[in-house]
Structure formats: structure tokens, C-alpha cells
Image (tube, rainbow, N blue to C red):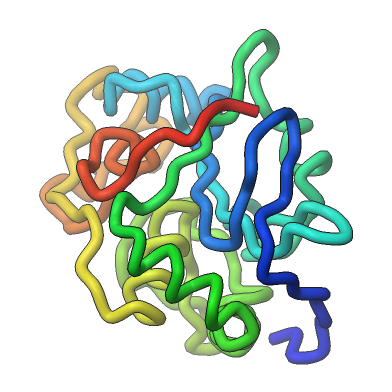
Length: 202
């Protein structure tokens, strides 16, 4: 784990493309790849990946799980956005939650760095999945959920997963039977959840 990554924290919103972004904002991303198209079709959504704002100044930075759980600049993250599509910015409807994250940014960043940074990506989409060294592997929406629920002590979107659309392609992806009925979630669950609203698009 990288315990030495330092972030400059500010307690004011950061404006980009006309939107005032805050630490804790969720970014839903359409991507152009084979597994992305399977996820989007399964979830009836254009979003197959997600990230979260972790720093707003002096440069906008986000965290996501893809390859590894990591910090990236927004421009690096945005390179993966599908052509002619936009990233959707989502925020908690509960202003108390938004304020709590802003007022405890240092603790929020430290919680991420201590518990998530550098973990492997979970290609198998299994909620509690671990590598050979006993470290948890995480996919994008799982990472965001566990980070927020762990720090805020709240429940976030979960469901029993289905892989019934394009079933033959899912079997090919998993090289066998998909993990039907296992608990998990997807970026679309944040798109559809009443806990969040859309601030705008980037």
C-alpha cells in the first residue's frame, strides 16, 4: 500500500467545465471495450466504469479500480471515456453527508490510502475476493462502495448479480459459469439510486 502519497486538500469546490466538483463526487464513465459493452447491455445503461473525486486542487484527481486501485489525474481517467460520450458527475442528495466528507477530507484520503490504494483489480466480479497474499481484489463499483460505506458507515446499492443478457459472451468472459446470484453492484446502480443526483456532465 502507498502510505506516502500526499494530496493538497482544500475546503472549497473546484470548478471544471462549469461544474463545481467536490471530494467524494462519483464519476460514471461510458467506455468502449468488449467487457464494457457486456456490462452496459446487462445493466441497461451507458455506464460501465466509475471513479471518485479524491482531490480538487491544484489538479483534479480521481480514484478508480482498473488494473489496480489507484489515483489518477482526471485527464488520464477521461482518456478512457467512449468517443462522443460524457462522464456523469453524481453527488449524495443528503447535504449532511456531502458536508461531512468535505469537513473530514484528510481523514477520508487517509482511509483510502491505508485500505485501498494499490489493491488489484477483480476481473471475476466477486464481492469478497482475495489475491495470493490475502489482499482483497476489487472492481470499480465495489471499491467505491466499500470506501464510502466503510468511511461513512452507511448502506449503499447492492443486489444479487445477473449475467443473463448475452449469456454466451459472459460464459466466454468468465471462462466458465458466471457468478450468478452473488451479491455485488455495478456503476448503473449508482446511476439509478435515489441516494444520488446528477450534478452535470464532463
